[in-house]
Image 1 (tube, rainbow, N blue to C red):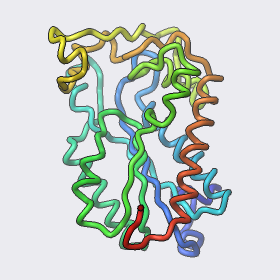
Image 2: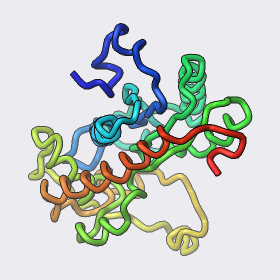
Image 3: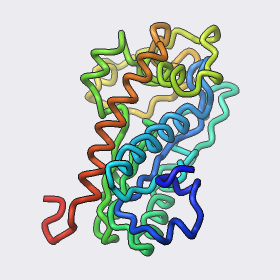
Image 4: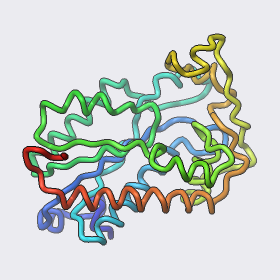
Length: 256
């Protein structure tokens, strides 16, 4: 039984605590190349939320990890042949986040971290929309942006989706669901526009056109050891932040 996981606890325990920070992991359910499970984003971000909250809780921070949201914005993957994706629109995701923020605030939780595990979940607009509608302090974290130094140190090429980094996490934390012998090379097709390829013009990439089999990045160099080392770094960095956030007093100049 984990004190920091809401799903593990009963009302007797939960009501006895004053929760300083709530962490909401946000995942998605979609194909990840040919070898990773559809729940990759859910499993990755749930693992990080669990471990980071444990790290902070054991250092005395009253943090609670909420259930992981399994549905994300997959609107650009719906054209993938056979690629079932449980997709919601961005506006739907923002509404659900807003409802959860409201419920946490009503229960006295004033600091909320949205922990994002899916690139299609562009959550920053939700923070902007809720900024003047809640007294809670909201912040967000895209886990793949946390350790660019480790990306370079650990991986030949991390990849954008189902590549070396995500496959390493899979081999480390849910190896029974990873089928390396089925992996595609994760080649990414370029558009016909140089401006888009260079990144200064943006589009929503149609996954069935941009990829061969939904992967972006070659997973061949992935290992469980890399996955564990990467997760250790993420847990320490996020855990330390949660400790600081829980201890910080909200005043008129918070968070400055």
